[in-house]
Image 1 (cartoon, rainbow, N blue to C red):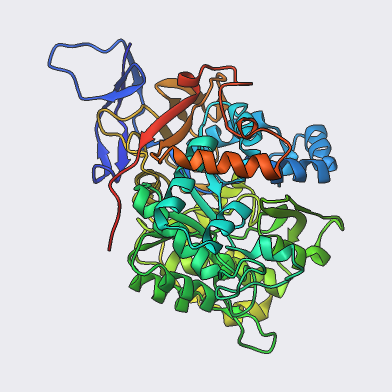
Image 2: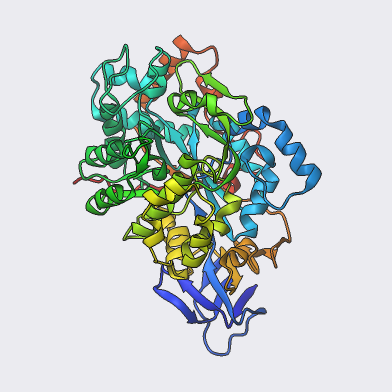
Length: 553
């Protein structure tokens, strides 16, 4: 069926279109070129005066996996209260089901979401959860860097090619799209009672530093040709003065592509009477110099949430700040670690106020929206359901000033934000939330409205209040099917999981098999993700993308 959207204002950085009045055609789930004269569409939909964008892409949001389930178990009262009161905005990942996750994203015009922390041992569980999220497509990033097998390989000084084969095998076995490194070596060191771990600290019993682990995995990602750079959660998360860690990590990349996650949590200086200050300007100065680096922000927004992370060092250090006062830490033998700590960001708090200010400073000081991405590190900085509020903060300088009035005065005095008048345009919002993310992930079939792309389309009613505009899309199409109308979900369809086709020497599986036979009481096949448990066939559930050419400086 040939469908035409007529009269809309196209905002599509993929084509350089910024509000161009142009019809949009799609058929059989794909966007198509305007047909020849005389060809009549089967369906015409008038979107005159509306803004038409590609479906949005969230490159970093914790929506599935062990930590998400742990948070749900830790905080059952949040889910009960939400279901009882039907509040307009769920405030943490513990508070809604997989169905609610898919519906809330779709209502805002999102059609693809990446779970950035899939522990290989838990990959099947993560994929089963993602398969139960309706409407949106998903992808996962496999965590390496604290696993015993990798550290043994490095201790034995094997070749980089053997590391590459292990990384590629892991991506195939977990059906993930890319590679994630969380405080490289830190979770393993935690098991030896190490409670802080910096970039050049050495993992006990292995003789390798965090820097060496990170650079080895980055080299693997480049050699394999992964479209998405290695996705890095740096050392010293949340610590005063950790801007120097972030900058040192940029320099450690040695000119190779690297993505730094939730960078707001590394934008901290240690100046002032309280030993805590904004270092956003220093961070962005380094970011502008290192063109090989991309970052997502991880904006803090006020209210109740729950922090979840594989960085057990950081989570353990903040257990006494838990609100409500309960927390979970866990270790997986031979694998990683993690924790869940509920937390409430408060405007009256000096630290929380400064975190809010630093995130917005990073957004507004950065010069390149193609390398800076729009996230709250859901749920750590705030729930993804607050994205429309964040969009308004970026697009409305007067609204920012109104919100600042309720912050801790000492934090305001230390911030540059009151003097930053920049307002993001719809084109810049579309760049950060659509086109740039698709390109960085290697998902060239989406994030744009070019012929041949999938028909993931979001239509918005133009409003002065951008929060209202982006809270409920006028229309959303997923693969050409209407899934949202006037902010209301119309049908539940199944999304698909995006994964990478990575090549490796089959001999590596023999070595991994021997390792599992020695240290695990389950077969290696129990950990690989297959078709078991899915309600779709393998070809229906997974979309395979090819690796590119190896990257060398």
